[in-house]
Image (cartoon, rainbow, N blue to C red; front, side, top):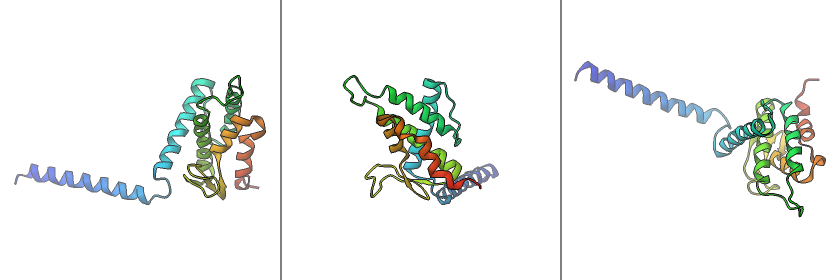
Length: 166
């Protein structure tokens, strides 16, 4: 066998070994794996794009950006109902997108993990676990449906208040 062939086989074997090691490391790197995390990351990106496109707001993932989401949800809420008072189509999707953005802000800045189902919230209630279970997607939905009385900024602050240094 020529040295070129041996070298090519060795290079391929090394490449395969590196790929397999990277996959193994990714699997062991903690709770950021799986479909729910992919969904949360996608929704986070969609919320950022929607905020930029429709409201000229740059959401940066900071704690303070949740206050901006509160303002955006207020604008969405003002337009969320038709002339008969029924909720317009697409509001659940908006709530999911912005609620997951809020949860991702908390996760990045304070820790926590996503779930899919919850014994109290039910199937596909997307609980967020940070010291206790909360439901940022439901927060966003209620903000859209009920208005300012369901302020997501205040709920966010209450959830992470213990994380702040004294």
